[in-house]
Picture 1 (spheres, rainbow, N blue to C red):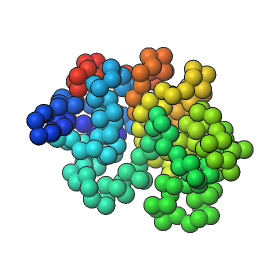
Picture 2 (cartoon, one colour):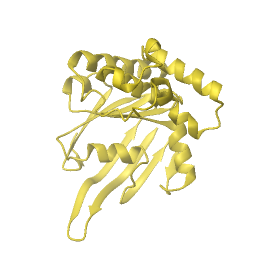
Picture 3 (cartoon, rainbow, N blue to C red):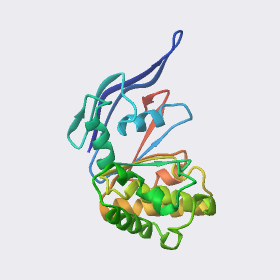
Picture 4 (cartoon, helix red, strand yellow):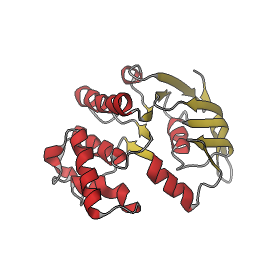
Length: 221
């Protein structure tokens, strides 16, 4: 499903070069739930962004669902990202001026989907994450756990093959974190969605199929 061959990422300024990722080789199978762990600054989020086609490797090859990525700026990649990938962020990234259901509809605005179908798909996604009664609320009226559920609903509304989650439980207490993790496990086990999750939480990582660790940009496990 996701394949990285000899991927390096170097960030350059006028005076300094920083090696963020060093020779990453990784195969993630369809339907797998993979965790990525490591200390802060080790390259976890950079790796996730490259898998999500948000960032471009300095060297190496990336392919997703058999599609080799050569042009990271073209419209075809933006379309591919919108149709095949769902993103969940630690800080939710909800728009406060929009209702819950309008936030969830956002990824569908970039597709040829009628307003009626957008609303139907958003409602289905919110029901799936247990927020049937919160559709007309605004983010400011929700708890942290509820906001993360909205973020998950937004990630799955377009029925992506792959979900990329960056510290999805990082801002939540243990009870809410476990609830969010249960939703992700359900998506993986029941709908066979491939999930890649960056986390600092060893207990959450142990619930997934496989764990890899990064240290100073290199894969050490």
